[in-house]
Length: 363
Image 1 (tube, rainbow, N blue to C red):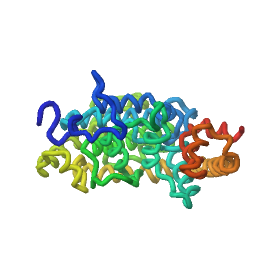
Image 2 (image 1 turned 180 degrees about the horizontal axis):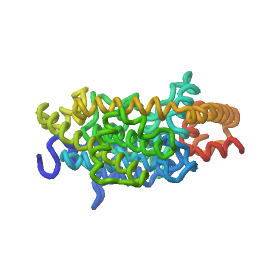
Image 3 (image 1 turned 30 degrees about the vertical axis):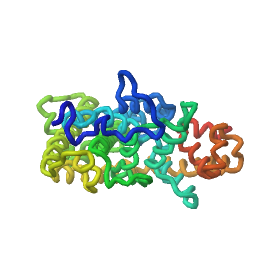
């Protein structure tokens, strides 16, 4: 450890700063300011109306992109604190990692990628950078939120099974350990809360999960509590999985960093492999769990029916705004000369909530 932070943590003194220099704040660090700018952004607020797995409005208990991002941040901060990393940087990356997600979740992303096939494609991590660098505009002198280099690097390199970053303009082989903590926090959060929501929706039951090691072990850990209420049992099981994975991550990552003899942030940037990881056993069990959710939840027939509608909705909306660009707000219209018609339309649609998207179809 080097003071309050580990030697391999990102500190404000080592930060590469912002694209547009700003005076230091009297009582907030640079990364706390990043976090606050993200929380106060309109893109962050709109996550409340964007699909995680189930479309917002179907049931008030299901997660949205907003509640998902908050859960990721909680897990990320726990990992960061235990390993002596920069908690504020980790939190900022966690809270912002899905700002580029379009309406209707990964289905919406796939549709926009198809529509943009001849114009550079669409990928939500890259779109997140467009949001924080260009599309948000709360300042009079420049576009974007003017986040620190380290926060932007964590967003650019964000990687999970469902995140395939197109990191442009970044020369580092990897992001910081704080960014890696955000990656694994995202993975733990979405697997566990998607399980809980799918069980609430009746898509799967405990009998079908008994072959999944990570689930059965979590059930065994809560057996002593003798929980009769099915709702409470479901919630406690999901929390037991989170606790087991986070604990494993902290222990395994601490050993990995020590064995790699990491002393500086630059050493982290130069390694292609991650150091914030799970043990081989936990990784194997989590992959099994992910495969189960893929086959039994994300590919469930009831969700596939919605996906067919989403494709039609977004195709119609894309065509509508390409044909009548005057229907877009003035800020987007003035971007067309530099960004192109199709990219601007894509930016506008990607920022919509599910509800607003459907409202625009009727307008």
